[in-house]
Image (cartoon, rainbow, N blue to C red; front, top):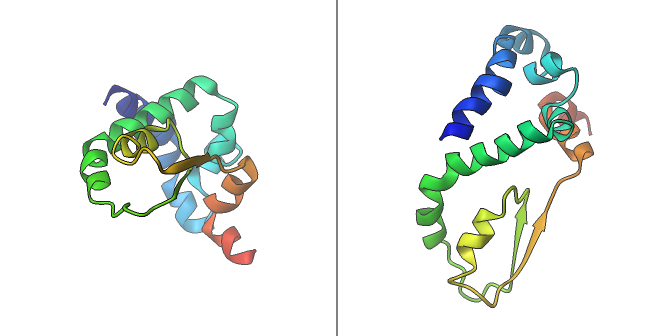
Length: 124
């Protein structure tokens, strides 16, 4: 949980202080705070990106095993993990389903720019 706590303190709390601006303008607070969409900023800060990946692993580790055990994967030929992060979801699935083909897809920075602002996404 260390990565999660540090990530919130370093990357999420400062933009959250600008929540009222987001409510008034619709511009994501992180975009205003960092001068660009959060994932674009993150792609230029490898130490923070590594911490973000660790934080997401911390956040999901408690539910991952139980959720994966409930997946009806019999007969599944291919699994695609969009985003992928550290690959831990695929790594948890594959021991029980070793013949399933797998792919991890990383969205492009352009995708992140569009998806971060719901107002922009509607204009597409």
